Amino acid sequence: MAERKPFLLRADKELLDAVQRWADDELRSLNGQIEFLLREELKRAGRLPRTER
Picture 1 (cartoon, rainbow, N blue to C red):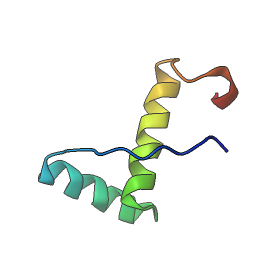
Picture 2 (cartoon, rainbow, N blue to C red):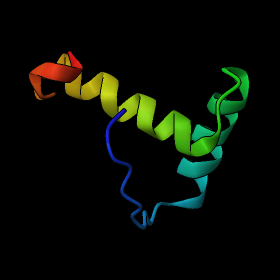
Picture 3 (cartoon, one colour):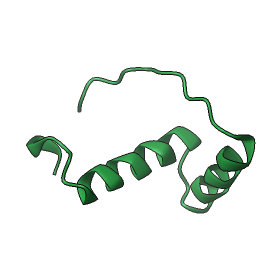
Picture 4 (cartoon, one colour):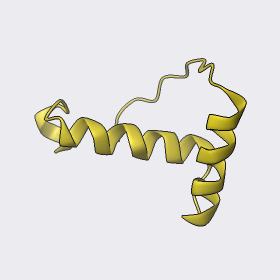
């Protein structure tokens, strides 16, 4: 697994609330849902390193 690097994310409360509800529906943590969404979009855009595709 890749090295995990912490970072601060500032986001609108309504946005985070919506992502939290989505995460709850899919049995993920908020952090896990954000990572999932970012990874899916990076795949779609062809921007993930070859080892993660």
